[in-house]
Amino acid sequence: MPIETTATVVAEVPDDADLLAVPYSADLQTARPVELHLPVRDLLAHYEAKGEAGEIVEVPVARAGGVGRVLLFGVGDGSPRALRKAGAALTRRVKGRDRLTVVTPEGDVAAFAEAALLAAYSFKIGESGKKAVRTLAFAGADEQAVRRAQTVAQAVALARDLANTPSSVKNPAWLAERAAESGVAVRVWDEEQLQADGFGGILAVGRGSASPPRLIQLSYTPDEPADRHVVLVGKGITFDSGGLSLKPTENMKTQKTDMAGGAVVIAVLGALARLGARVKVTGLVAAAENMPSGTAQRPSDVITHYGGRTVEVLNTDAEGRLVMADALAYADAVLDPDAVVDIATLTGAISVALGRNVGAVYASDDVLAKQLLEAGEVTDDRLWRMPLIDDYTPALESSIADLSNVEAGSRFGAGSITAALFLREFTGGRPWAHLDIAGVGRSTVDEGTLSKGATGFGVRVLLEWLTRA
Ligand code: BES
Ligand code: MN
Ligand code: ZN
Image (cartoon, rainbow, N blue to C red; front, side):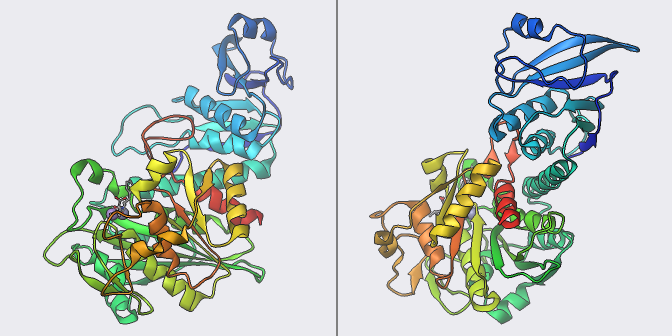
């Protein structure tokens, strides 16, 4: 479900707004574009308000039809992070209401509005719970900033929806249909075409499933000729049971979101035109369902990737790198990109290292790493750079193939790093970055801009990077 809340801009604050939000800062001063006829300072002092972001003091006021409410909301230090927290808190407070008029705070309006919209997201199958506020009217806000916020928030919501959809509905062909609705040109390889072109990794992972795999390519071309071509590659495992290296139930039940990276790629490609991106962007989603069956690949099988590299599959649960390797090799051989960024729920190990709030970025190129880290900081899709430690490359040696997909023993460990090193083998030395979002791809809390389930992590950082450069 897309976000059903609409953000609009109004020039002035109506005197008689039933529900009005007014910001105040840490020194308990309110913005005063409107006469509130309230002893604001005394009220804030009475409620022991501190001015922190997320703090809301609710005051009943007389209105023609009865009682209205003024929500005094703290904006902390006014930083984008604080404004996000304040925006999300407001939306959550006015659940079920028709319209909230907001006296727009000073600072990053796009961040404020975006967070307010994201906090309205929920994924429900069937009718239950209170609906989010229908309209957020930002008084005196910059229209362009609010429009951008709306576009970005809807893209995040789309990525969440795709990842939250149960795998009984969401198979590789379904994902390809959703990609075709994104508004950009789409090409899809079915099983036969994958076979003909030699995508051995995607085929091997998909072999155990009744729903055959797909490779999905989405192409965005800006109006003006572009001087840069970026390829985004997303992991599109529509369900990861582990395959014959079967996962236990506890680990398996979250794995409908194992296509979160692919969902981000689809959502980003769909939003580029509306944001006026000036780079050429090609998206690749390597989609397969990883299932055990009589036709599934076995631990010890050797597969041949796009371009001819062979891999010994020692663990069928390390399937993400197998589908990604094909797409990365294809991007290098055919698409001639200036930079490649892949995004994948690749390893449980990264959530051990970085937890649930910060995503990992690996990069073969320092400039690319720096750009992504900065974009992450600005958008709140926070990233931390992880090292590609060359000493660990022997972990992926195989005695019978060019590589193995996991370490045979346990000498090296570092599961997220060795997975990144595996991917690097297929990038042809191009400027490349890899986002491991296994930790941040889902949320266990319904709080702030997050709702339980898929987070859409990656949409905001990639859109920022692709549209502000
Ligand atoms: N999809 C999983 C990674 C994952 C784990 C994502 C938890 C989200 C939450 C991936 O395909 C996987 O199974 N990785 C294995 C790799 C191992 C077999 C080397 C893992 O992390 O255990
Ligand atoms: Mn797996
Ligand atoms: Zn997986």
